[in-house]
Image 1 (tube, helix red, strand yellow):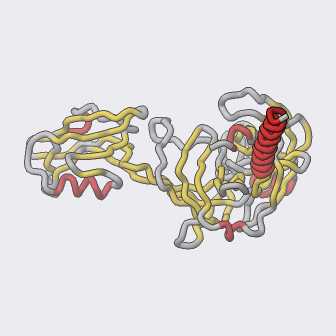
Image 2 (cartoon, helix red, strand yellow):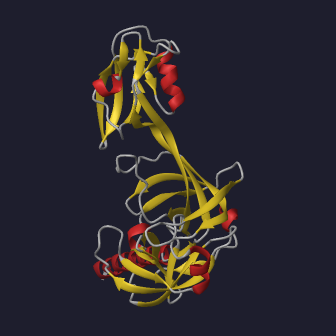
Image 3 (cartoon, one colour):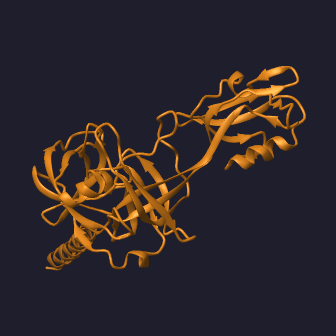
Length: 335
């Protein structure tokens, strides 16, 4: 009898634990399945965590032209992380590292294809300015306009763009502590056959609304700093099974407020690995009149079907700006 009671008690405990686990996962799933809908334009200022080499240049020295970086086999697209003992976060840090230079080789730490390397370089003295140079042109950040796709209700992580941001060499840029700002669209360059159009926007405010920390093949991701900026944003459930037929996109072509426009999904390829899961066609005459169709800056505009979020706009067809690609939401959501 005592053994039986112990078995019943043990079974009761196991059932309670099972129910708790089920409730926890059910709750998480319910939260995960509902997000704040995007469509609003945002401005990105993305720090690269170093100085990216975008071009090589010759330095006029007392002994003629020299290119120290080329001689050290530094390449366009390399990210300079350190010169000597100085960590490089910006182009100004390179000047700082070379300010006290006298003679000899310097160790330069770079990242190439996600691998760190050490190069030895002898700076050249510019006969015009008297300063030592590496013979490179660099950038330490990149700015642009895109569209927010969603904000998770559970942890306020956001997803945007639907495609990667790449450097001069076509490689994925490393993004660290990028700043995201409210943005207002002030003009539209209409898309034409053979020529992509463009949204022109203005960054608003001096304080970022979010921090971007991840650049992937399916977009820029990060953390919202203050949800108050999106208090009036609609909540929407997610559907991972899109179908051919009528749908809509939410995008902004004037000011700061997204608007819904009619589209058709003409092809679905759920297994495509290049974030081209849908082919979409703009049907809305108002959007075609304003922008010609899909233009630069619309990347990330949410695609909605049957009242649920299914993906985001990623690319435009250059030969037909009313058509383009979209990425499925499940490929963007878990970043």
